[in-house]
Image (cartoon, rainbow, N blue to C red; front, side):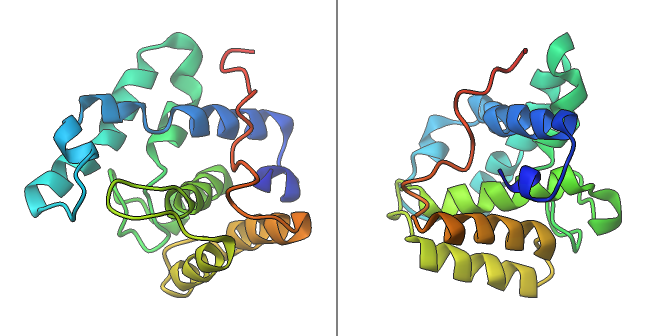
Length: 171
């Protein structure tokens, strides 16, 4: 929806939807004890968790129909200032689709319940997104578009899905 708000092409929107649906497939290679840990991860565990983006790329790039959006799906933890992972790309290397996916991923992560905390309400999510923009991590244009959509809907992150789950992966 954010991509549509930004006037992106149908092809770009389709790639973002597909990448969003499969961006965490690499977590299949991460230990369940790390994924389900109810407290902060230690440095070694964090390293393993961060490896999921590389695994996402490896898995998706092996499926012919997924190859074209594999790099996008694997880029969901990249940041404008280059502090993200797995490749450490910066703003000059991140297209608008990757920026949109990163913002949507942070929004979903903040609003969802995790083993170590409850999900945040919309106001808290939007405040954290703005902090990330101010720190140079997230794209202000993509963040504003996502925030505008939620505010325009008058709802919460729990009432409106960031990703349209009905999206076909191969259509």
